[in-house]
Amino acid sequence: IGERESMPYDVVIVGGGPAGLSSAIRLKQLCLEKDLDLSVCVVEKGSEIGSHILSGNVFDPKALNELLGPDNDWINDLESNFNSIATPVTTDQ
Image 1 (cartoon, one colour):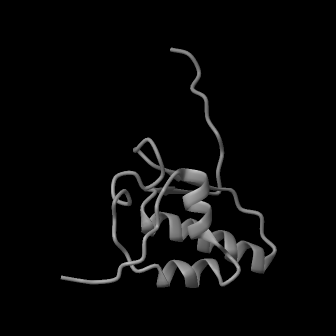
Image 2 (cartoon, helix red, strand yellow; image 1 turned 90 degrees about the horizontal axis):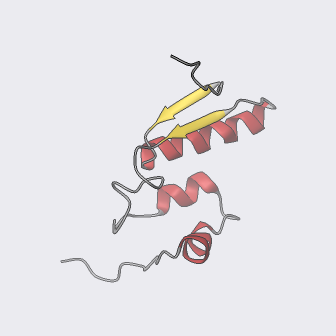
């Protein structure tokens, strides 16, 4: 058996859903605040990050806005770079 390829990381987060992604983002934010350089890897079994639970999902973006900060235009980036549609909820039944 041949040698396996490997890549060293300081932190590996399993799952690219909301919890995994927010953990990775917050960890990198803390690294910036503390002037640390940790390599962070998010492993997702789906073809795209969050593909199992985020596609077609309805969620309140308040926590994501707080995590990413007021200067981050993640909704516009999502729509323009990933062919996604972010539509505000207007009614609830």
